[in-house]
Image (cartoon, rainbow, N blue to C red; front, side, top):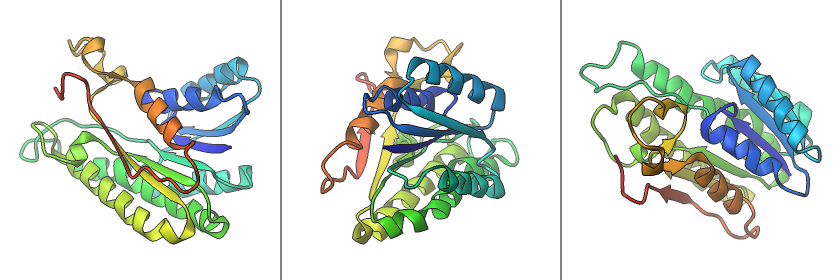
Length: 235
């Protein structure tokens, strides 16, 4: 299985890379993140732990259209087909529409929406010609309802869910699966120092396990949405 994961050097993306690398069949995993040093170190560490898995990476900023397209072209040159594409790259700037920093909406849209849009468009012709593959987009509970201090982030995630729903309709006839993943709070680096106990919210591996399992269903089954929240509810 050839698996492409963006935002792979930490959080959910890192957990996803580890989950697919554990597969005893030996997948090929292509990773992307902005921090070249951190990404390269993670690739080396993961390859050492799972020698059966073929792991490669390319550092780039997917919020820049040309870099997202360049990564997509690199993927097409690296593997003969794409079985799983996980659009996980994202960022968060807190604030309400009335008081968030100037430029927040542009930043949120570029990283949270346009990265997935441009990368997916780059690799879609190949996937459509082969009539196979599975595309996951990591949306958010913020894709479903507004919340305090959500502002531009929530707007971008609403848009990302809309993008995913359109993909689902467009790709049915090509037998390409499309899944929107909408997690609530997940304990990643961004929560360190927040005062929120790790056991109050979900683990990154929870999301990785759900995506891994959804990617291994029969060809005729498509999970359209995965909604998962902490057992005690949203914060």
